[in-house]
Image (tube, rainbow, N blue to C red; front, side):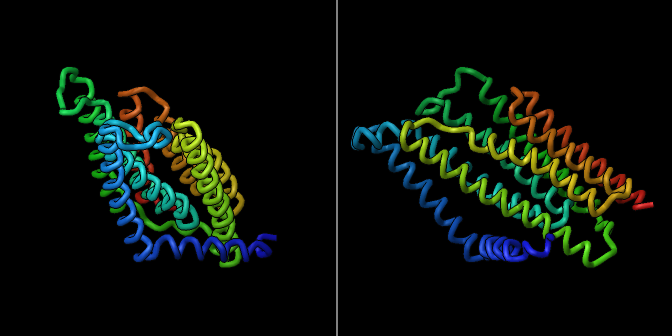
Length: 279
C-alpha cells in the first residue's frame, strides 16, 4: 500500500533538495536582509506621513518592529527545516526542534524591543528582565544542544530493509502534508493581515498542528518498532517536544522555565538511552 505513494515521496524529496540547496539558503538570507532594510525605510516613511492610508494602516511606527520581522522570517525558515527533518531520524529532528526553540526565545527577546519608546528610555525594568531571561534560556538550550549531539547515538530498531523503507516513506508523506499545511496557513494569515491588518497566531497554529503530528509519528513508529525500548524512546522524545510546544502558551517566566526543563529532560533521556543501549 505505502509503495503506491512513492510519487508523493518523490515530490517531497524534490522540495527537500530545493530547500536544503546552498543557493536557496543564500537567496533566502538575502531576501531577509532586503526585507529588513525595506521595513526600516517603510516605517520611517510612515512616521513622516509619506505612505498612503492603506499602507500606513499596515505599517508600524516603531523601527524595532523591523527587527522583530527579520527574526520572524528566520524563525519561519527554521520551522520549515524542522518539518522537513521529520523524514530523517527522530534524534536529528529533535535536535532541529531544540534549535527552533532557541530561536523562539531569541525572537521573544527582540519582540520586547518593539515595546520600548524611541529614543530608548528604560523606566520599567520588566522588559530588561524578559530580554535577559529569554537570552539566558536560549544560551542554556545552545549549551544543552552541544551535549545532546555528543550523547546521541544511532539506534537501529528496524533490521528489515523493506520495513525501513516503508517507515521512511511514511514519515515523508507526513512531512509533505505538514509542508502543505505550513504554506496554506502562511498564505491564509497573510491574506487576513493584508485585508484587516490583524496579526494571526501563525507559529502557535503551526505548533498545534505539530502536536498532533507528534502523536501520529509515535503511532506510526510503533507499527515498525514495537519493542519497549523503541516505544519508550520515541514517546519520551515526544513528551519533551510537547512540553516545549505547550510552553509557548504559558505566561512568562513559566514559559522559559518549561522550555529549559524540557531541554534537560530530552538530554537525560538521550543519555540514558545511549548508555543502556537496546538491551
